[in-house]
Image (cartoon, rainbow, N blue to C red; front, side, top):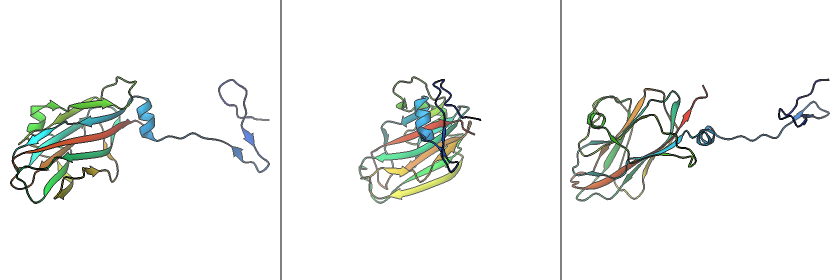
Length: 196
């Protein structure tokens, strides 16, 4: 007779009932939880960026240099009220940009935090915040939206975005017409996943 043991050395065996059904009780968790337990889940935040015109500026750039995929769960754009601006402001997500002054200027995000408070593992990659008149000069427009009010943050969370090693993502922001001062920030939540 064959048995299925518990693997811990405590001599527990799996139960099979009279209809040949194996009885199990499973504990499952999302990949993001597993990554957090292993210190591979991150919160990135640009901190405040003050835009002083109504022209487009690159405000965030992230490039994955890890061997694992970076799974981005959410991109939040948080905007204060514009001084002097009216009409709509717009946000673009750029796929795989590689050039621009946001990259050559290379100012790190204000926050690059591991979501496991017991882990000191850093994310390996470029995580750069932008400034007024910074640029992204190539890449493809992946998604864009516009709003007339800043009362609610913009959330790009319809589904995950995957950045394999070497892939990148950028964020462009265009304030409302007439803007002379507007504080914006970008928050990105993502985790590393190696389950290919």
